[in-house]
Image (tube, one colour):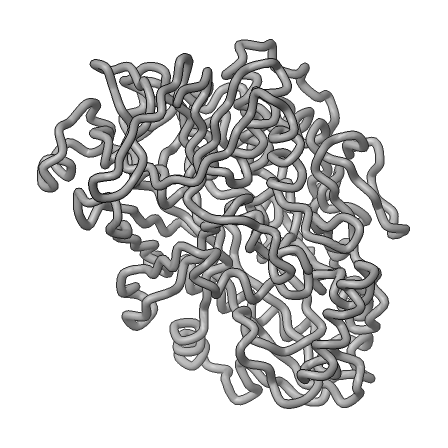
Length: 552
């Protein structure tokens, strides 16, 4: 088998690249180890907690013991299915803050400033405000990725926004438009009541063309002729074959599997590769380093009125919701239920938001297994720019063996300060008049958790990953010894090999990563095709004029 381009991974970015390359007339072969995404547990938005906990759809990765979280091992779901993690994620859509991308360019990723990437966000979107307002001039209307908002019918959803306003914070009609900072409606990748994954948006249209094919296979390593990538080896045990790329090999296997595959193929820290008996093709010290993530807490409140989603938390109601969705794609099942949110600054002197809130009108664990016995709500809150850094390493030269993952969460004192501040600010928001008629008592952390030591212990025991790993194949200038790819997505030190996924992020972006990952696929496809990039945007984003002196 061979094609002009071989893409490893049918995830958020890989699907976008496949579509744009095949659209341009190139032959494309996409290799994905996971199976079909057709199941209702994937396609029904309200069922989002199920796929990420199913071995059928998830790689099942777990971190090493995290030393600053009491030795806990945290799950790290990654999509093992067509659509990758866009088929098992929470469907929340966030571009990121403009300053995130400007920092990329400042760090050596030239051509990736906000002015450079905004046209690609606009190209990929088909945006609908769902009647809740927004910045239409900042949004795309004809792209393959449908982005919209929920109904916001639940009174708790609107109470959260009003409480933020009462507390003195900004409101925003569109955090993906000119102004990220503030409280407002949350956006999601849902279309006509179903998950609008990268597979639905990009891959399935590409597969309708004669020049794009999808095969299921396990990629063991990249095959080289000298320093030129010529294909990949797939298969298990003795049943192996080489899939050849006439032009280039494109790795889009995730921030965990992409560095693993590079290292298995001889690209990475020389000493580490030799320790595993792997011949070194190119020494790149940064492969697997610079691992970042968002860590968050679930702060929960009990409510005295039957207004939360708890009324659906029984078998009969779940069955009714599922049946309604199956019949017409509507009802509670058609939303991920994250319908309001906030991006705020934790302190004066912070230039742009560093805390993110997801609001959910139900008190429940993210895996959907534990619900508080009674009505309640919660916010997911956490700092967005932690200075902590982790790594991905090989455990073995056997490709079947999962990688060693250590995020090194909470390894910097700033992390603890930021989380304690997040709890304090959240409690203040919950104390506003908008919640007076709803709130009964604080479930988590609990009103008795007040001292610095008590808060630290709560954080240590209850902080959870937001499942936003990135950064392990850092993009930067060719003279940066820790950079893995250049600003054209080409792996430094070898030929005809690119990495196109969230692993190339120099730093993590504000918010959920699906949107920026797809944007990377959109922009990289122009680099791969040798096309002129889209013209820079001249739009000026909003930044508070008082940020140096005021927290809100």
